[in-house]
Image (spheres, rainbow, N blue to C red):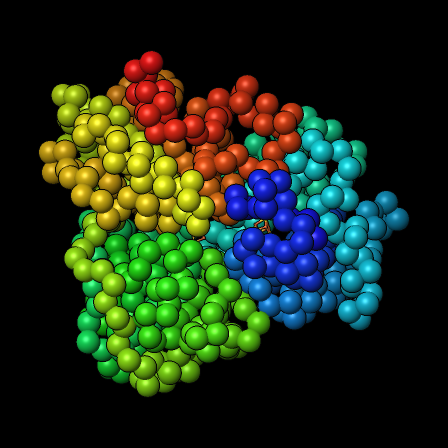
Length: 543
Ligand code: SF4
Ligand code: SF3
């Protein structure tokens, strides 16, 4: 196996024996195959569009879900991935019948197989290392990872009935292009930047889907303690799953708690009407082993990040949507698109209430609408110097010790600075007592990683209010933590919006070859992190 798609990749170069995340070589091979088959299908759909034919939402959504399924820590069930490969090939065969000029197509578009042996024999050509030139490989993978992140956001929008043919067509064109040997490094660089444009569109679509369905996030205090009832812990990013779970738990005596990236659900007005929506339990994804144990009740994973569960709570772990783990119960949609969570609820009834691990409240809900409602206050604070600088510290959390940098950095920031965050990166500092500036908390949590879009909207608005011609003239620094591929699409989207000098940590992606990294440094001022003291001086211009 060879996988280097996430920040925790072995030795900061690539996982080759097994994944640091728990991915086995067999699972890695099957995921590579699924991506290869998805590229083949995308070549066919792109050709059909060029012929003037339309591609059905079912096919678009199949591709989106397949990409999402291969995101780090989303799905560890090899059988599910094999089945998706078979389904992808079946869809492709049907569409190929309508396609002209098949002879000129890449073999990935024409390949077929059904038995495990036939599928496995393709694996070698499907892997990352099949592209020999390291710069071309780096750009291809950057495009693929960006599109995996975009697919995740599209899937959530799709669940709420929102879709966009232009984004679907782009994702498929981009995937097809990663098998096109005629494309130069320059062409692939342009496609990488174009991925960022569609990243902005995808996050905007999801923002519309979420806010139209559940209202605009508002300042909210979230309980981090526990009640006396048994509970269900829901994690991941899918708000539609949460809505259905809340509906089905009404009157059952079961409380619902969020874990990790589901925390921002508490900020939406529509979810506040559920009196059993009790609070947020625990921290970021990587603390699951301790926190799922002490929660006592069933856990529903709606997306990444799953940590391979301990046997002690594995039977309490349920998955749905893109998430999966071999041996855990997976809840599928019925023919009407609804999910039946009664098995989860019944299990909860027989479980003990969660053990309290923290107490108190945390504050969040600073998505664009809420922050813009406070714009006068914010602008005033900047003009009077009460706020010297904003630090966008969005992204992911992870298990590496080096990430303590972000806690230390938050603590060391001068008191006249404000952190703007989104994604599970926030757990490194959202429980510190960092205080307020003129009533504005010093940590503004906009929401999930996709709500980094909100941070961009806020920045663009501030640029307008201050009459600036360049977003980079704002007193905003970007010190972003990344882990998986959603952070890749967030990064590419920020680049598309013209943001420069973004610092990425705790390490730069292993999939950036020296030459591709050089392009990003020279054109966008992308940098890594060093240590808190030196980085603070650099960000504050005190050197
Ligand atoms: Fe390694 Fe990350 Fe790939 Fe898992 S997702 S196999 S940890 S690079
Ligand atoms: Fe976290 Fe997995 Fe990326 Fe949505 S839950 S940000 S790491």
